[in-house]
Length: 320
Length: 261
Image (cartoon, each protein chain N blue to C red):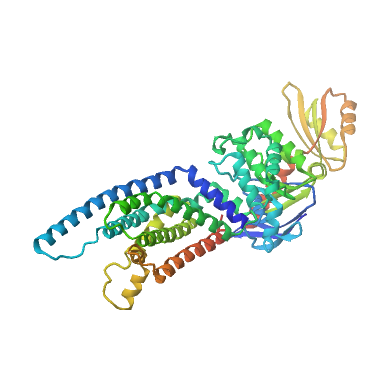
């Protein structure tokens, strides 16, 4: 549905997006994850035809976003970072205006508007002036605006920013409900959002793609591998010596736990291996009292930090 | 065409919910009515004097009081236009850019030309609405003066003020598209009109430069219209001004995509 190839956008000297490539399949939700200033908004602006790319190509539903911009614009619903609202209009007259400029035929307009209002759950505010709405409601009107012409592709730039936790959950449900019928790209710098809503994730940093995969795959197969947390009553040296005997263990960090004599240890295990039973065997074999033994997959958060900080370290090395 | 109409509709509606339009139109009508009364008093006094003089010295010049009143009134309308029109166009694009709604327009399936024309036509409609009540003053004059001013002159004067206003709006629309600040847009528009207003002053001598400058002057062609002369030169002059203003606005709106966001 969406194909981006070697897309580059520079503003004068600085490059906001640097040769990125990815594809989005029909009906999929793609998460665009990266720290602020990573190039998420710029990529979305190129996809929606708001700004032209410096080089590379992007196609939406088979149409080139620059050369066949009108065809692409007809098929895209777009919520920019700041919802594009006219404060002096009522919700319903605003959506009517958007439906008109998006070429919704007159006979469908009313039902499309009602449908959009219902999807974002603001039917009760339809005759309210937009300037009187709270931040959360404004954001919902912004989403309704992106849905009103029933587009094939929906692009949402940070759709949950400024919402309270309850609203965030609602919006995530809404987005999940839209998938299948619509193809969705959403950007965010909030990690749980990606693992909860997206089928696939593109992690982007300094304008470059650092990883593309499903959230689950990223979380398991990535570098961090498995981690084991341990709380045990033992001497640190002895514990280290015992654990070093297990080949799958890469690294052990131990520190005194809250209770005297106990150690709390974090053990990094090589990817694809499970060392928990071996660890338990060693500890029980030496007769140390074991209080806790817990395996944990590296969270998306760890991976994200690892990927983005590694990349910036790499970048600064290059600069030197 | 539908896109153009949608923009036009939104824009006109926007004028009627914004206090700016009400303040400017109210001020325009108030000041023009005030000057209408002053001009009438002045013209009546002058015509008395002229009558007295002709009685004292015999003969005397023909004194066309109604035409003087019409000329003076439309002179005031054009001056008010110079001061007030920049406020009506300053927000056309700068406000959209500031609010982020520009991004919505530019990613919708409508062309830049549709956006610009829709906005310009809405502004021209507002101009008509603004000029309409001033007809009340002239209808008064029409029925109470002897002889009444010829309706052809009134019609041509209205065509003149409408063309002048539209040309100013076209300039204002361009300047609104080059900046995000409404204040700067208004100041640039005002400066441009003022320069075009005075450009022909003091060049009554003949010569190529003088006649070129006189041709450029916004107000010289307008004066013909208020005297009842609908001249093709004037029509072409204002027509090309409007075309140029709209064209430059379209180019400027289009170029925004290429500028640094």
